[in-house]
Length: 384
Image (cartoon, one colour):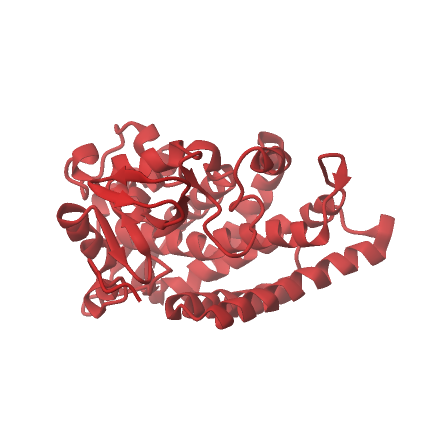
């Protein structure tokens, strides 16, 4: 264990209010070392530098290969070219009616004029149904997937490599079973995205099953937790900002940029990783080749030198500065899907209510790292 510790990412005061803790670290120690997260990077300029310089800061920062997240060019390029069309305009146009219908159904099922725990009452069901609908997975996977995300977060926080590997293996077995069903069905396999991946090629050869499993794991890990967090964060923010809530009811076309700004203020995804390929100085700290870095999105997107008052909601900001979906060659390919789903859900929530209100005496409980947002958030829904 390295004796030098600039901070403890798992300290009770950090876990109790992570956004405030990251704000303090950004001002006090912009590149901070800990045994758990290695070099944590808090400032917008430093995070952006890392994202845009993939030669100095490699994505190969894990012991396990992740397609294409942990790859660098030229290997990354071929897989990225394969993946991007799955989130292109044609796919989004085809999925939008399904997406909006699911959102309408979820809102219709909410109780009228009642207090609702928004995470388990709406946010998690939303993320699970959307993911399964987009990939063509059965509804019977909703609960196993929810349990898997919880187990993954617990294992990640513990830092137990064996527990993390066991959770990954369990998920992979589920995906392999879905692939087997489609292979066995042959020409009768459902015409969905999961089946489509079985027909893909890269560098002139069919994708290996391990590669397909890795792609689907990345999409699911990246989708379920952050999408549920996003809905909880935005719903609570609107409940505590009634003027904005009313404005968005009158102008639903502003919901999408408003979502991005709210999620800049309170990030649904805490961090990502990189590794230095050579000695480099970053934020006044000397980083050696091979050392790992943790990019704290939840801090970089609140950097005062870029955004002024980080808690001020503004729709006139330069959207290119918002790192919600990353930047550079690893910018999130699923951003069009995420934006569509979140917009559809928030528009449906606002259209189906006349007011969202916080519940007096029941403040939200923050999620535990690596999750963000809330574990629990009570809201009063006054229905139309």
